[in-house]
Length: 309
Image (cartoon, rainbow, N blue to C red; front, side, top):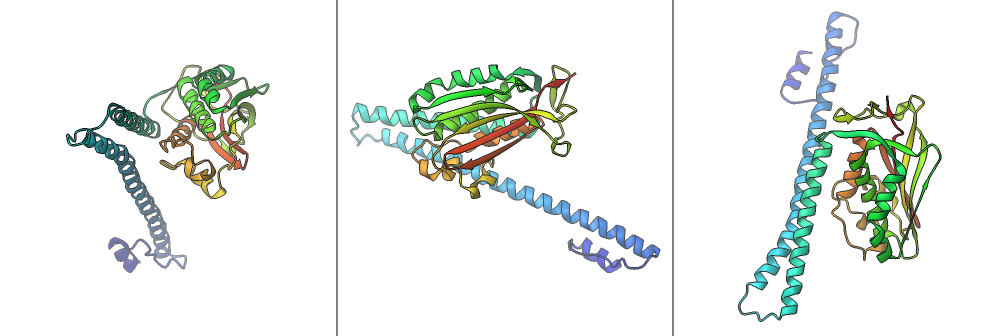
């Protein structure tokens, strides 16, 4: 026991003491081993957190550097007196600089938004929301994009799934992100579908509710009988998402464009949209999943049906 204690004190978290026998020393050794296991688990969790932090910093640095480098290059070109750029070329360069500025602004805004969501910042205003109203706003927002892409947007609301409990702005944001993603990969002539269905939620699957919520309609959570609502967004992208990519689809800076190589001609996103959707759903005490095969990709958000009185 003394040897194990010294090893543990020197940083060897694998140190364990013999705990055979039924005397007091064995009991102390068992308690020591339990403490060592706990310390080892905590150390591994801290190491994993540090690895994630380092990776996030590297990813953020890369994502921010790309637009800044592009802007600097075009600005330096515009400032070169020896280059006789015509008006159309100068205008094209200025347009690129403007686009990269907007991209940088959007990326920084999404990073801050994701940090607020994952850090519990900003209270959610939970209320009973008509699903039809949420779908109306999504459809209206993407009407032009659908027309430009040659895509039709349809919706269906199952009886019993007409309302959902949530923060109006945040749930709309999640649906808007998923719809934009679906339209990006939907081939011309295909359909993007918004669905609301009754979901049966087992007690073992119910998540703890986020403490940072404001409940405008009373308590918030799944019904006592485990009934929730599944809001889903479907697209008919030809390639779908390869199985090996699915576990990472909600990771920060994971870009679905890499997972849908056959549709590589589409404009790339920031790599944060789906991470934000997941954070919104988890703040609501729900869960999100994705299934995909060639010709059909479905994102599903399971949420509380209504705010409980």
